[in-house]
Image (cartoon, rainbow, N blue to C red; front, side, top):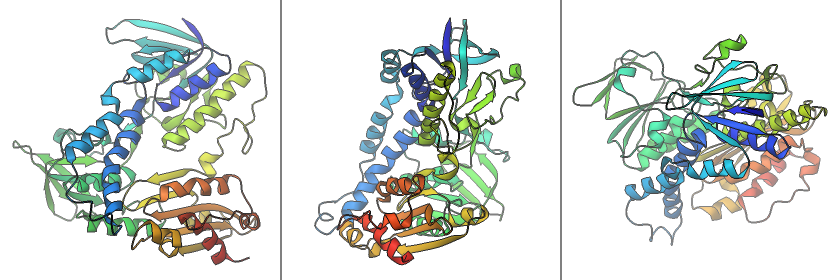
Length: 467
C-alpha cells in the first residue's frame, strides 16, 4: 500500500496537509487512532466556544436597556450542554470521515508508528497491522495532550483535563482549576456562568503571556462573576476521598475542597508511541523542524508537535504551506521558504493571532510591548480606551475595554496589537492584515473606519500616535 504522502493524525492539521497534496496531484493517506477531526472538533475549539457562547449572548443582552428586560431567568444548562454536544457532532466522526473519502484521501484507523524511512505501520483495534509506504514524505500531525504535573496524589485523584471539561455531562457544584492560561481562564468563565463555584489557582497570574492590562481586566471580571481567583497560589498536593470530594492543598497551607479539579497548566506532545526511535529521534519530545517544517529527510511535523504555535489556525496555516512545499519538491519546483514566501511559515514568529473567549474577550496579534523590546526593536506603545469609541458605546451600555498598538519606530509599521473588551474577536483580523502586510502608518490613515463601529478604534489609535 503505497502513497505519495502519509499523514499520521487526522485532526485539522493532518486533514489540511492531505487535502493540499491531493489538490496538487499527489496521493495521500491519513492514519488516525481516535476521531477524524481531532482535538479542535471534539474537545477544544468547537465545544468549548459553544459552552461559552450562550452566557456571552445573555450578558450582551443584559447590557442593553430594552433588551435586558426580555433577558429574564438563568441559563438553561441542559440546553447549553446539548448545543455543545451538537457542535462536537456528539463525538461521532462520520461526517469528517466521509469528507476524507470525498476528497480522495485514504483513511486508516489505528495507531500509526514509523517503522523506517517513509514507512508507517498501522495497528488496528483488532490487532491487525498494515504497512504503508510513502513515495515522498511522512507527516506527523498528532497534536498535543494536557500536561499533568508531578503533584502528589494528582493522578490518583482522576483530575479533569481540557477534554473532560469540554465534554462534561454535568456541571460540578465546586470546581478548582490549576492554571490560569487560556484554557483555565475560559473554563473558569464557562463553568461560573453555568453555576459552578469556581476557584482559579493562578500561580503565574491570569493570562500571564498577554499584555499586563489583559490579566488585570479578566481577573476583575472573573471575580465579579463569583470566581475566587488566587493569584500566586500553587497546588502542592491533591487527594480525592472515598466520598468523591477532592481536596487541594496549596503552598501557603490552605486546603480547598471541590467536586472536580481541572488541570490546565500546559501541553505535552503526542509523540511517545510513534516509533521515532527508528529514525534516531527521541520519543515523547517536541519535534524540531527547519524552515520548511522538515524534521529529517522524508519526515515533516506540522501543528502542535513542532511547538511553533499551539493554535489550530496556525497549525492549518503550517499545513497549507507544508502541503504545497511537498508538492513542489515532488514536481522539482523551487520551494520558497524565505520571509513571507509561498512555502514559509513566517507568521508563526511575527503575526500569530489569538482570541481568548473570556468575559471580556481578548484578541491579540504579533508582539506584546515586552516581547518587542526583548527582540531589540525601537518601539512606541500607543494605548486607547476602547470604551471611548462611539461604536463601542452603542454596542453596550457602559462598554469597558482597552486597545494597545505596538509600533516599530524605525520602519513605522505595527508589530503588535492587543484588544480587550466585549466582542473584540471580530476586530483582530484587520490588525493581523496590518501586521502581516507591514502597512506603513502613513498608509493606514487612508483606511477609513466606518462610523459608528467599534473599528473606529483604528482612527483613535492613529490620532493618539500622531502624524
